Amino acid sequence: MSIIDSILRVLTDGYWHNIKDVAEYFGYSEIKTVIIIKFLSEFGFVNLSKNKNQVKLSPPMFKFMTELQI
Image (cartoon, rainbow, N blue to C red; front, side, top):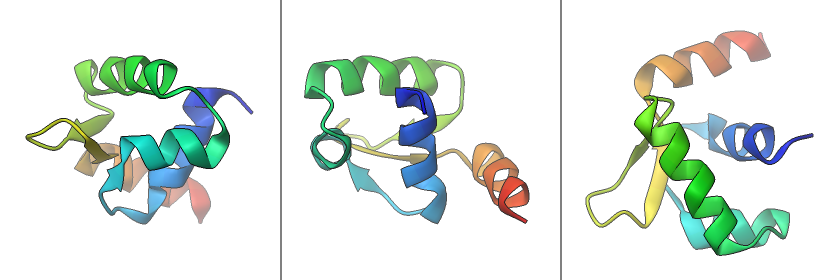
């Protein structure tokens, strides 16, 4: 599973997640995780909190990921 798949999968619960916790959960470096999350944010897949330390799926992506699980 790719790092992008891993990140998206952990975010499918629809809640805010601390970026540091996401990185630690999978054993990825925080820098690499931040770079990927910024990429996902730029293309509208995820939303970053105002202070940029938390992430969650954007509403359209959340709907898409939820439908994939069904």
